[in-house]
Image (cartoon, rainbow, N blue to C red):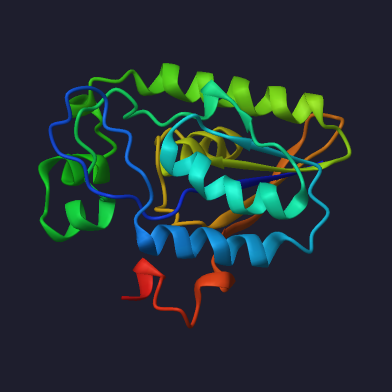
Length: 203
């Protein structure tokens, strides 16, 4: 089967919320989600899964609607920062040399108060469950940069928790065989964003 790991679109900034920050997509993020739906709607996608977080669910919705599918919410696809009261887009953290961003470059997530090994184990178990339920199918899983990295580093046998920064609404494909072999087929597909001034990495 083929598993499409899709990062959410660009979200709004949330600072010091009364509970967990769970931002909606901003206008750019909504445009990215619509372009992604156009990009993938011609493919035979058998199921759509999404993280319970708003930015992922809202990114999944245009494609699910185009395909006539209901997006299945999967708690195991939630990001490691789910309980944080502040959400600052990664590009802003990078531009401001935020100490949390600098720590992540060193693969240090202690400031988030999260056990990253447990996080990776949860992500892997969740995605493997999706794979087992959809043998011979193509499935889109809308999630987060940390989730994508957690699964791919597991496949690649890497000790680091993150090794690349997926672009908003990027698609990374994994081939999963019946024998248990997992292969990274593509990484960070963003053709649907080019020419629309919506690709952060090219700004």
